[in-house]
Length: 273
Image (cartoon, rainbow, N blue to C red; front, side):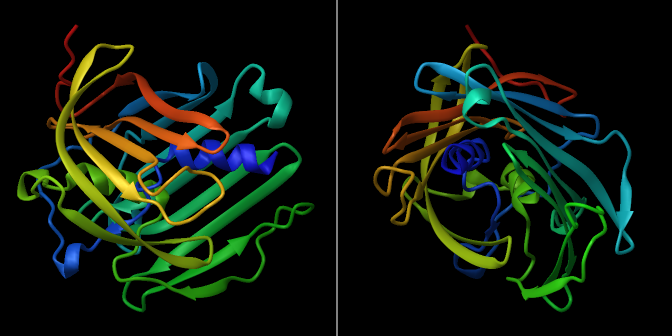
């Protein structure tokens, strides 16, 4: 059941949303704002022809302060639907306080309910020392234990902040088939991946046709995805740069996630019929 759950989680988050773009040491991003407080994005998650879960990301209407920095409070939710709940009922919340200027994570949290599995986790980041202090709550008392401290990459981002950071990359400065080297921190480890930029592509969704940037992460050997080019992600090629669709070829079939609704966007989403 945990295999099924993590399939949903990895596909839903697009695999590449949780990382800090290094691109050979030169961060290529735009300062132009694409993020709006009060924003909401709704997704459906599918395996084969069946919708198995729904997901939502929200940006709180108010700004918050962490480490004396102004922050967005961003939450991502995922819940299984229909027959998928018979396999393993999922109701997850991933959240973070994200610096409004640098889009780095100051604090993140996960409240995971997957079948009988439970996890309540809090992580505080120190960007001067490049460390993350991870605390896990006791399942009976709810009290957080002593933090475990881990080294992190420079300007580290959690999964949710990586999702937001993707929205300010200036893709105009990339050429087709340019490779972006990326790194990130999740749970207790640092990771590195490579992502290939495949230019612009208009994709068809339930809402209509949407011009997008196409990204393909090079997948390491694993037990979920079939081949190193098995995952493809599209983000809108407009003033929002929101994730539109993620599609994955898997050993057990086909899975992905697709945008089905939105509100409160900074800019008009370009959709045609």
